[in-house]
Length: 435
Image (cartoon, rainbow, N blue to C red; front, side):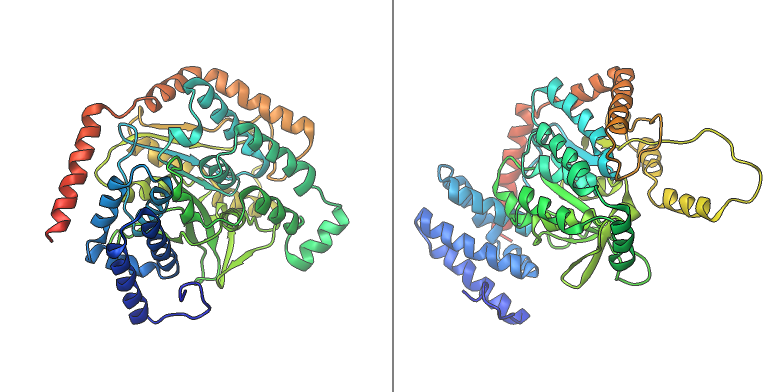
């Protein structure tokens, strides 16, 4: 087909092809023929995202919903239709009483901290993480967890094993070799090892194709593009699109491979090499938004503009602050650089803002104070054991807060709300059919 060839269509040619594919869809009569037509349309929309506007203009979105309703017992067709709807920005109602958001900070091997909170959540609710949330967002190590739990549906134990591999395979380096690599490629560790692990774990599936799985929530990872102007810009890797005219504050896309998204989001300067995708240079999203919760709230609001928030859960990777006051003299150059890094990767400013804006029975933040500083690349068993103990002690002290969170998360959508959803979808179809 033209869409899979090396040729790039002009805007007019792409539009003409969109009309042709929509026409084929109306002419197809059997489930197999419909599936083939929808597959071709999906491939075209991935290649030419702007053509989704024509789908809405020609009311083909209504046709897609009717097909989904008419062919409930054809799983293959249902899967490709879910992808089409995600490509054009159509979103089904949330499954709970409101929008349930999970946001996970960056922090390297300190990702074991949010992992322990998530283990408690699964144990208390009896549900998997991808079943508990409508939207999951992560940056750097948080992106690793967001994709493994939300899209690949790995178990929490498999995620814990991933962090053990961080220490034994990724964050091991001869100091002399690391120093030479730092000067040569600006990365202390072997980036190829990290890429190989990601490719093996997450594979080369395009983000948008994960929408075929009806169990997958909306998921995103945040990176920082450093070659757009003089300052880094946030970039959101999404497994969904927004409707035409519903503009996010953040650039991004859904046509990237899963491993590429996590690789870009975790390209920590000095640790791993920058990652180039389609002429954009990506670095770790933590240099801009180490706590991506405000971004997650913004994206969720665009997806479900008429829904209230049921739960917004923000998970940190631990923090440490030396309480000792330094001498009243000028600070060293090292201290100045350290202060700049701490300021750039601060997570508590976003927390303070959201804590003021969202209701206390909606917004929850868990970020334990650690007994010692733990670096992004920590792999010493004793330090990692202490990190786990600090987290366990923190969670024990916050048992009532955790119980309240589980209660809020467990509230299901009522039969009345589901009936309203059904009526709203029918009314929406009628409105667009006669427009």
